[in-house]
Amino acid sequence: MSTSPAEQPTNVEQTKPASRVVEDEQDIDKSVYKRGQQAKWARSRKAERGDRNNKRQRRDGELPWEERKEQRVLDADGNPLPSEPRRPKKKVACLIGYCGTGYHGMQLNPPQKTIEGDLFEAFVASGAISRDNSNDLKKSSFMRAARTDKGVHAAGNVISLKMIIEDEDILEKINSKLPPTIRVWGYERTNKNFDCRKMCSSRIYEYLMPTFSFLPPKPNSPLARQIKEANEHTPGVTRNDPEGYKWWADVLEKLHASGITDKDIQDAQEATINKEKNNDSDDEPDMLLEEIVRKIKQTENQARREYRISKERLELVNKAMQIYIGHHNFHNFTLGKHFKDASANRYMKEITVSEPFVIEGTEWVSIKIHGQSFMLHQIRKMIAMAALVVRTGCPLERISEAFQSSRINIPKAPALGLLLEQPVYEGYNTRLKAFGYNELTFTPFEKEMNEFKMKHIYDKIYAEEVKDNTFHGFFGFIDGFNGTPIFNFLTANGIKESQEVREVVIPNEKNEGIAE
Image (cartoon, rainbow, N blue to C red; front, side, top):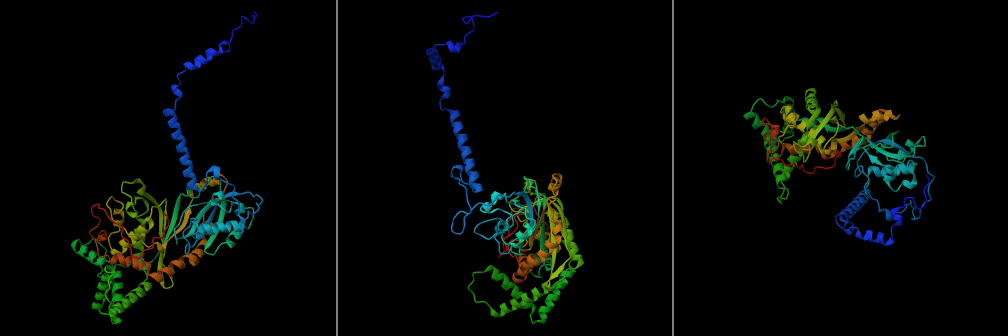
């Protein structure tokens, strides 16, 4: 049944008098709209967002949005160059190697000369990166797997970026724009989310050292005296070293044959210790004594160059290094870590010690350490601990004891012998294959990498060792350390109760090293 318009329901709000609407609005409690705690909270949140954006912009080197302008590549006169035709870019992982001599590290750091700087210029010059993107690495999503410091080498490293790969000979073009000390071994396509640093599952490092580093301390040196005194107090703990004793006896015989007496040797040793204690002394040097010191050093250095390690001693080195394999607490092998710090626990997957090889008259050995991750100075301290245990004759188990809670001072082996062998992508290679991409591996380039190491990396290490006697200087300082007996843990006394220790600073030590 229909109803008349008068009988139909009316909208109350439509029929209300306007004055009543105003009265109802006046009845509302407007205190809830006042600028109280909610307004303050909103302002605070807005300010925090602004601060975060500003920090991100400063971190990434960006300008605020309102200040950004399209950046154009300029010619020599400062005029904008015309834009190039856009070419498709693909996300790739480039496998590279380099000699770090003469460079201020891997990471771009204008105006310093760096590996990334030369690589980026070569990519642009070869057309792998467009000219329009040549003024900022971020435009190409440039990232490195491992950062190396000043003067440090890498036989293998990985960088990821968006690259133009249309040219079939792009690899040859890139290498033609690079110096011989930097090589791009190859590249592989990856998915767009690939991050070469975060997706690296483990790394392999190599450490080169001359085999004379494993010889025992010089007789009558402070460390040799500590070892002897501890043996008299606690006999039967340390190993006998007839090979080492014979080597030093042969050196002494050569010194006697050259006219140097036992008293000369003692005087020279005391003079060397006193000179280290009194560097600022104005006393006139004893020219005759200085000549004796020079002859002794010359004879000993020549004997070290001629030394060839025995199979028994090399096997001892190998056994010492194998103790590191597995999960261990490496708090004594870095700086600033406590025993209870969970991050001090690291996993070593594999360690190999090569057969000795002779380069320019000096015998060397290569030690490769494959670990899941490493802390600051960890590799250098691992090498030093193994070498010290071998050369002092203390039980190899002393390395295992260093994983316990007691604190000991393990010096850092010279940075000279350390280089990055390659990052490893075991886990991510499975995902790459699932996406239809090739595995990321250095295996196809082993021959070229070995040739590169021999020509551009090893020769630099050898030359610096011959010039500066780096390794003898390191172990000689430890043998002659005449202060607090911080190396007492290398004697029959063993590792004592946990105590506060200080890092020993080796004179003239170069602090360059891989950021492990």
